[in-house]
Each structure stands twice: as C-alpha cells, then as structure tokens.
Length: 168
Image (tube, rainbow, N blue to C red):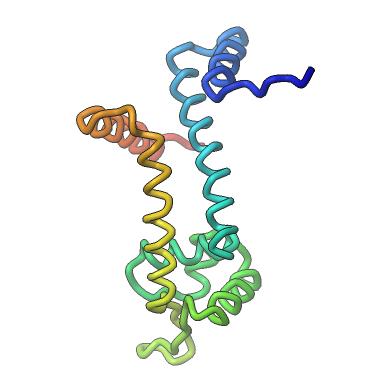
C-alpha cells in the first residue's frame, strides 16, 4: 500500500513538535515554521508559474528589480540587487533583450554607462505574472476576512522591521 502524503498542516505540526522537543519555544516555532512552510509552498507555485511564462527565476529577479526600482538601472546595480556576478547579469540581460522585455540605452549623463529598463512588453509580462499570482495568493488567504488580513499584514510588517535590527 502506498504511503499517504502528509498535508501541509500535518507537516507543520510535526516540525513544530520536533523543534519544541529540541528546546525551541513553541509560539516562536509555530510562527517561524508557518512562515517557512508558506514560503516553500508559494515558491514551488512561483517556479511553475515562471516556467509557464518561459522566464527563469534569475530573469524574473531582473524584471522585478526593474519594476520595483521604477527607473532604469545599470547592469552592476541589477547584479547587486539579484546577487549575481556581473558576467551572469550580461547573459540574463542578453536573453531578456532578445525577448523584447528589457532595453539598454546609454546613460545621457555618462555615455560610458548603460542603463537598463523594462520595455512595454516587459511591463506587460510583469503585470500578467502579478495578476496570475494574485489569484493563488488570494486563495491562500481566502479563509481570512479583510480585518484579519490587515492584522496579519501589520504583524508580519512588525516582524520584518525587526529584521533590520538583527545581524543575520
């Protein structure tokens, strides 16, 4: 007989119990393990979504960095934001430019620098991916009312702000 795959909730309970048995504080482990489990499951979905869009995770990192910056960036800035070597960034930018998702232009203030920006097609891809992922993300949060979502967001933002104070 084939083994049943444990549910996400069951895996969460087991992990928390293991961490508590090893000396972890239960309330801390429940939160951190839940955040890690959520991140893992969403990351799995995002990988499938990117494959459907024919975009690698590295290319997506470039697209999202440009979208979030709201302005053109240099390849060096993009390499730093996405934690890759400049040579890897050149390859990513070549692929994205070949697909018409980004464009390179000389910096008008410094003709020796290149600036990279999203094209209209790049913005379209970004917008479509966000709309598609919003459907799944909304499904994940469907059992929470608006006030509960707002409170969860507020609490997680408090925790995120604390990360700046920790030398991780």
